[in-house]
Image (cartoon, rainbow, N blue to C red; front, side, top):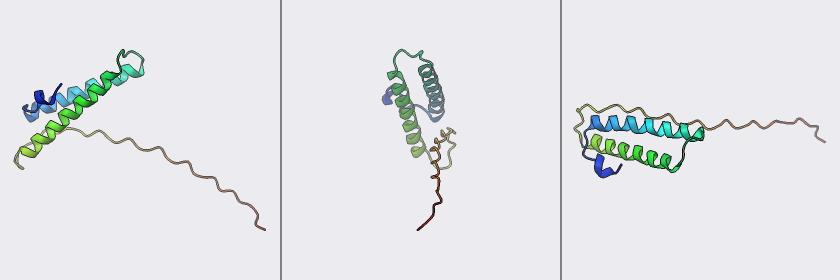
Length: 95
């Protein structure tokens, strides 16, 4: 999918494409984790497709008047960093 193909779509169509692109990316990641994906480059292409649709959605949001209704697209939660292991304090004698 090229940006030229999606830049002229409406906000509702872009929201629908975003949802399907995210679902496709999820399916590709699942297939890859199960060892069923023949070409892992498809994951990269799917990520880029999602980014293109998000870029188009941002452009549509910037060009619409402030009072116009905008489609709701859920943001993906950020992954939390693993907790750092606490250093064990040793109590020793001084002197």
